[in-house]
Each structure stands twice: as C-alpha cells, then as structure tokens.
Image (tube, rainbow, N blue to C red; front, side, top):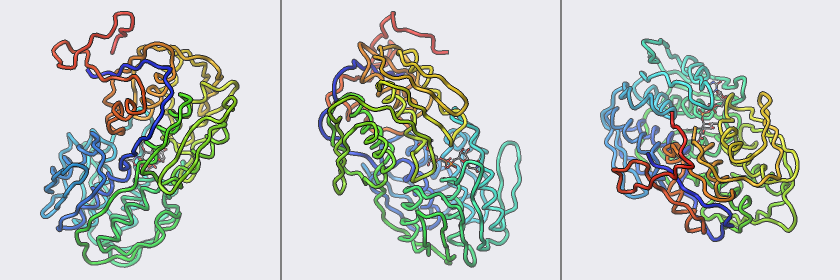
Length: 439
Ligand code: EPZ
C-alpha cells in the first residue's frame, strides 16, 4: 500500500503551478454526452477521479482518449445505463444523470452511497428531474429516471444546507435540450458551475446567469462539439496557500484565478498572512509577528469552502489562541481531527464545531487518511511537525491532488512516496516504531 513519508520543519519556498479543477472537469466531461460530436477538454488534471469518469463515459458507449493534459470525448452512440460497479465507486458520477436525461430522456445510475463526510443525498437532483417531467423509480439500489417529454420548468433547488453544486449541474445539463425555458432558482454559484455553463454555451446551449443564484436556460434542439480549457483548481490553490503559511515559507501560486479564493484569502489575511494577488498569481508569506486565531464557518460559494476546512484547521493548530471551525455543509467532515490529535493538536468537537486550542508543536506520527481533504490536512501537519510523519491510505489524496509530492518537493519539502509491500519496486518498510494496524 502506498504511503507518504514527510520530515517536517522546512519552510516551503518557490512557485507552484496549479492544475485544472477536478470539480470543474467531472461535470464538463459528463456534458460531452450531450452531443454526438467530438469534444476536446484541456488542462485535465491527472487524477484517479478523472480517469474514473473517463471509464464511466466509455461504459456508456462513448469513445474517450487522453492526450497529456487534454481529453477527446465522442459520445456518438450512448446508452442510459453505465457500469454500475464503476459508477457506485465515485459519487461525482451522479452528474451523468443530467446529460443522459437531456439527450436520451432516460438515466439509470446506481444510487451513490454516502461517504465518510456525510450521507450525500440526491433529493434535490430528483426534485429537478421531476420538475422537468421525470418519472422516478428506485430498483435494487439504482435510480431510474424516465422523461416521456422533457419540458422546461421553474425549479427551486434550495435545500436544508443551501444549494447543491452537482444538483445544479445536473439540472442545467438536463434542461439545455428541453422544450421551452427553464429557470433554476437558488442555484449553486460555485465557479465550477459557471465553467460548466461556459462549456455548454460553447456547445450551443442558451444559458444566462450561471454563477449567480438564478440561471435562465432556453432549450435548444441540438448541441455540437466544442473545445474548452477548464478553470484552475481553487481548492488545490487554497491547500498550497495554507501549506505556505503553516510552514512559514513564501510561495507563489501560478495559473490561478484569485477571485475564486476571495474568502480563503480574506481569512488568511485575518490570521496575519500576506496574500498578494496578481492577474493569475497569488504570493503567500507570513507577515512579521505571530499568526492570529481566526474562526470560520463553511458556506456555499462565495463563502468559506467546506473543501478547505480541514486544511485551515491544521493552520489554526499553530496559532496561540482558540479558534472555532464550524462545518455547516457536511455532517461528518471532522475525520482529520483524531489524526491531528495523534500529532499533538488539541481540538474539542462539539456538534458542528471544532474548538482548536492552538500554539502546540505537532509531533510526527503514523496517521491514516480518511477522505480527500482530510488527507491534505494531514500532509500540511506533516510538513510542520517535528520528526517524521507517515501517512497511509493516500489513494484518497490521489483523487484530488495532481503530482502532490513532486510539487511539494519543488517547494523544498522533504517528502517521498513509498510502498509497504515488500514485493513493490517502491518498497520501504515503515519503521516498526511507527507501524499501526490498518484495519
Ligand atoms: C460538490 O459536491 C463537490 N464535489 C464537493 O467536493 C464539495 O464539497 C461540495 O460540492 C460542496 O461544495 C464535486 O464537485 C465533484 P452538494 P456535491 O450537492 O455537489 C446536501 C471534494 O473534496 N444535499 O453541493 O455532491 C449535501 O448533503 C468534494 O472535492 C442535499 O441535501 O455537494 C450537502 O450537505 C467533496 N440534497 C450540501 O447539500 C441533494 O440532493 C452540499 O452538497 C444534494 C445535496
């Protein structure tokens, strides 16, 4: 099993190029199902989730070719049923439903189970499909949506936790080929939703207002192939910005869109971190003097992103004082807390709040990844901890961070990827003092 070994205490210095956005690429690849012509998408990050989405499109009948950081997709003849075994393994695959409904008026997708960060319901997606004329049934754990007549509608997509990113994406992709007009109210405003709309518009869709809470769609009869370069990954960028601040380094993030990180930059500045923004760069370094405690609550965009909550918590463990981290989006997104405590952090959980008593030096340990962003928090902790940190189950990281150890090594980190299997060419035994049971 692959693991990361980090020797902490080195300030990160230099420049890191931010990859294309995972959360933009996944729905955009799904949108390529809406036409029988070829689509070409650039700045594709080399991530396991993206490779998975390629396999899902192939299981639906599409031709998929990766060429370096580009992908060519041609969904000439497709079917409404995917390879359930693949689909059920990646929650993001739910976003194939919208294009299948838009093009074939039918979709059969395994009901995505919950995951470690929460139940991950899809009631809002189904609300939108029903509003567009969908008949929904559940059979042996699979959601089946049939739409005899796909007709434009007005649909309110707000739920208990606010808007839904992939739900908005799904309804937008189902509505672009519907008869008549659709208005999506309480739409998600994330940049990834706007990027999807930009791609759909290049395909010939008639969409206005994406990126705002109300999206207006006029159904068209057909969409054509298009070429698109996805936006940079704002969550990856935020992760490196926090790593730079936590290690007391100085890092320039290149190929970013600073406005996509406004809420993160604001809170970092509140914590006494300098963030200088250029057109497509952000330079991050500590100001003189100590970090300040900052309390945050995660919100839908443009609020503080839930996908940066874990990383920011690691930073707050280094601050003299108390900060409160409130997770309002997902019901169990504190899986990184027990692992950070094993490294010496002092964090008390009270419902949706994590109370961080900072100012303690973290100690290296053997810790376990549980989900994508919790893993990133542990990497940052390893970069600032004394001695050696081992991070297991890093397949979670590979879902969302392209070339992580290479990028960190370029910034001066002492980090390596090894494998605990003696038969692996990359074998390196985990020091017996650090071995923990993996069950
Ligand atoms: C997207 O997930 C992202 N994933 C997530 O990033 C991100 O954390 C999330 O948006 C919130 O920003 C991708 O884009 C692939 P939601 P999504 O529907 O769309 C509730 C990462 O680390 N909800 O916006 O699935 C839901 O339970 C991943 O990159 C309903 O109640 O999230 C949650 O509490 C993790 N009913 C809240 O809304 C629904 O029908 C937001 O979920 C749908 C969602």
